[in-house]
Image (cartoon, rainbow, N blue to C red; front, top):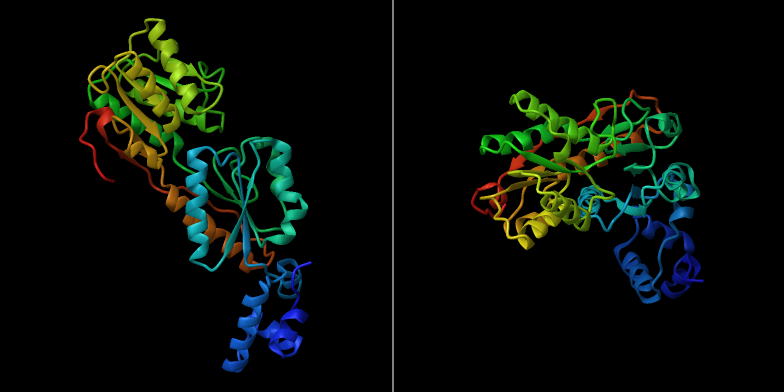
Length: 347
């Protein structure tokens, strides 16, 4: 066992109550006494028992964040933004990886770890619209992402369809007419308006942009991938090239797919952007440093983090009051870089 309050009290030669007052930052502790207790805490390496402290105060000072995969750049950078937003409120963040598994996501909402946190931010992938009732919990919960709309919780999401349409319009304005898209789900050759996944919503935006421009949606230019990583992006692009399908632009449904596409195009001697213009989605940090730098949709990740933390703090303060759920969507913008014919910037 680690050092206890009693151990600190003995070293500092004060009462256990005095140590507790110092740990909980209570006023009216003499400066000399407080200093002696702090020195004893540092000497012993004492760490407060958050669960016991939470039982007394009703708060742990910690919020949870459950995301599908931290190895994916977007979620790693989202977690960083959330941690920084929470720190501004004096909160710690307990991060959990669900691997996009439905059972793991349900466990994050209902499992025993809840007692160690004051509220939870959840970015589901395995859960879907039919699981909305499972999120009706007596626990502060804010949803991130696109899987469940109109549910019982506050929800911070992004303008997936509108921003994807803007990305394709950016390519159209550059004179491109045969625009491929990689990262689609199976069955996206049909109308996807009823689906709530990021892929289907972004493909819907792609379709809308082409239709509004009077262009045909060509099924062979819509490519599915088993995942959204660099390898999948490179492989989907190689298949397009190997099949001899003409295209003069490529919209990757996330940046890591786009980075893989740049690799495959470079290996094949295709000039980007002269022969093929490429744009991604998410504006992860790496897009500024690829060669060429990758144009992308900035969906407002830092704002999403700030809004989500603020909403969760409000829910924590409400102490179970049933306030109607809110859905927020921050603004997006198109970041123009070398891959679509613009000068590189240090944005």
